[in-house]
Structures are given as C-alpha cells and as structure tokens.
Amino acid sequence: MGIKGIRVKLPPKDPNDTSGPDLAGFSSASGIPDVIRIFNTYVQNELPTYLIHVPDKRLVGRNEVKRMFRNSIALVTEEDIHSRLVALRESCPTAERQDAIRDIVKDTVKFAVLSHRWLDSGEPTFYDILKSFKPYGYEKLVKFCEKAGEFGCRLAWSDTCCINKDSSTELEEAIRSMFKWYRDAHICIAYLSDTTSIDDLHEDVWFTRGWTLQELLAPWRMKFYVGNWQPLTSDLNDKENFQVITALSRATRIPLDDLRHFRPGIRNVHEKMMWASTRTTTRIEDEAYSLIGIFDVSMMVAYGEGRRAFYRLMEAIVHKCDEWQIFAWAGTSSSDSAAFPDSPRGYRPLNTADSSDALVPSTVWRGDQNIAMTKRGLNIKVLLVDLSQQEATIYEKIGTTDVQTDAYSNYTAGVVDYWCYDMSGDGVLQPGQEHLCVLLRPDPHNPYTGWRKVMTPNIVTIRTESKLRRTLTPVWL
Image (cartoon, helix red, strand yellow):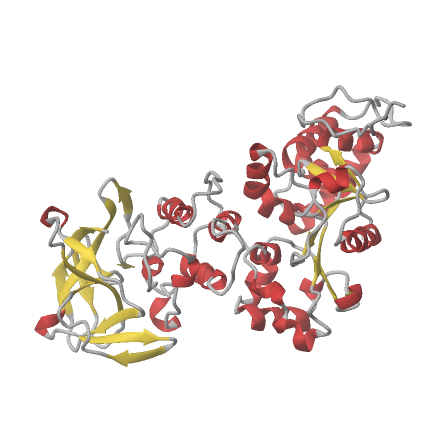
C-alpha cells in the first residue's frame, strides 16, 4: 500500500513572484493610475514580507496582499482623494495629492502588530503557521488576531511567526525594517501577561526586554491588554490616556513627549542609551540590533559576531553624532575600541543642568564637533588636565551622587565637554562647573599613539576653582 504525502502550498519564496493565481473573486480591475502605482509601491516596499490573514490565521505574502485589496483600491475615486487631501491639510498645510493617496492606501491595507514577551515554553514559528500546526502559545496568537479584527484589521504581524528565520535575507530585512513596521501599523497590540492593572504595570517583565523598547516608542497608537487579555482601559489608543502614559513614563523614565511622539535619530544618544541600559536580550547581538531603528542608522545583521555588534552600532552613530554626552559611560569597554562601552548597560546618568546644551548660544559650543572614526581609533579633541598638579577636584558619579575621590590623581583627565567661544583652538573650563572627562595615561607599549584610556567603574568628572583655558589636544581612543 502506497503512502500518500501531505501537500502544503507555501507562499512564494520570492516576494516579487507574481506567478500565483488571483484569489477567487478578485479580477484585474482598473483604477486611477496614481492610486494603483502608490498601492503597489507601498505593499512591495513598506509592508512586512509576510503577514497573518486574520480571518483564517494563515500566512500571506506581499503579492497575495495585492490581490486581496486590488478591487478595494480600484474603487478609490478622485472625490475620495480630494476629501482626504482637505482633511490632511487641516493639520499639514503642505500635504499634496500623493500624500492623500498614500493615506487612503494605508487605511485600506491596515495591519496590526503584536508586542509581547516570548514564552519560555515556545511560540508558534513561521513553519508552524505555514503548515497549520497549533503548538504551545498558539492561543496567544489567536487572541491577538481576535483583537486585531476588532480594530478592523484583516492583516496582522507577529515577530514569532511572520519572519522566515531560515532566510538570512528576510531576517535582515525584518530586523532593519521592524521599527518602521511598528510605526506604520494601524494599531500595536501589547500583551502584558504579568499585569493586572495600571498600579502594577511597572512590574511587568515586558519592560525589561530589549526589543520592547522600540515596540513602545515606534507606534503612534497602542492598546494594552493585561492577564487573560483584558483591556487595560476603555480607550482605543492608550497613548492618549494620561494615566497610562504617566505610568509608562514612571516605569521606563522616558519623557511623556517621547512616549507619544518619538522621533528616531542620533539626537540625545546618551538619553536613549539610558533607556536601553536596563533591558536585556536573549541574543547578545540583539542589544545592538534592537536599537537600529531607534537611532535610524544602517548596519548589517550578522548573528554570531557577539558584542562586536554593539561596537558597529556605536561606529554608525558616531559617523553622524557630535554629542559629547556619548562618552558618559563607565565599566568594561568594547574589545574593538576603548572609546565605547561593550553594551548599553555601560551608560550612566548625568546631571540634567550640566548635560543640557539647549540654552547655549549658537556662537558657543561644547566639546569636539568633529569626532571621527579613523584607522587609529576614535579621534577626538580634549582639554588635558594633569590631575597630579591638583588643578581640579576629582569626583566619581555613583548613581546620581557625586563623591569626591583621590583615586585617580596619578592620571590625566581628558575633558570632553569644555566650552569653545571662538575658533582659536582653545577650550575653557568654567569654575565650579562639573566637567565630564575620560581618564588617560601614556601608552607604555606604543608611545606613538600618545594616550590610552583608563577603565573606571563609574563616570569621572572634575571641577576647577578658577577659569582654565587651554589649547585642545587630539587623542585617539
């Protein structure tokens, strides 16, 4: 007796493969050319590679999404576009016709994303859903799809089962695009399994995981569900609930405005690293990869590289960043550069009054504005102070407390946040003001490099009793 195998129909391996049949009932329909063009571009370039079709919990590729929504897109009229443009211009006077069309497309092809803590016992994988298996954790996926449907979404995305991790190309695209996918989602559904109410929200393990930081910051709209999938509030968007957003701020120490209107980029690098410093990831590399979207930098994904991933992230940030606060870290340095910590956990808090440059006049600046990575290491100009000459008082910052110390009096301080008032090449330390520094000593093994950075368990700062003006010195770290 022959044994018959089970035939499984896979989504196209190539997202651009259009050889599959149209879905029943969806014929090639005509429509406004601009609408069809923007629709095709959006689906092919901005949607996740795979999504869950909410009604039947199956995976669909981008080309099947096109077929699913083709008729709806063909029904868009010029009147629809004009009405949407008028509405957009109420909040954005510069909005154009293509912005209105894109807005209509996003409303039509809307999808929900899931933010959650992975179960130790496992989650449904890409191939589980592909083959219609229902492993442990499947019930969470069902509940997620149920909530997504309540928000009018026919499509949903979950990091557990919508990424083909056997394909390095698809995995890298997902990691580098994930922030954008969470931002573009119609709704982010966050499941906090350890929470019962707003009062114990801060105790949820969700706040300790590395990837959930961008899942909190990226979405414009979030809906929180607690144990047994009960809604945390009756609001449609919990980011508009003051009680929730205040509780989130207390739990994460992220300002309210950033929680509501976060903009990715390399501004305020130190502050963002502080947000990440208390979080952990299962894979070491994810300490860096989970921050790619937050800093809006581009870097390749290479699992197996270990802590070198964080060095590459810092390297990418430094190429665009000129903030002296980036040196406010302590502890173990990267094995690739003494200029960087080996993880976000190296970053330490700074005094707000001394770390903010918001009120500095445009004709005055602090620190080196041209930090650069070179073959010799990170090149930065510092103001050198020989601590053995007792020109300054030395402090260690333990938590938020400054503790005076003489433990480093045999080293040289390389001050990174000096004041510059002209183009003379001199830096100035103001009396009584806290100045961040890196501790340096001559390199006994290679005198040509000049200085070697000294590792310290805490941030080191100095204060002078009188104004100190000195020519800046380039060092390589």
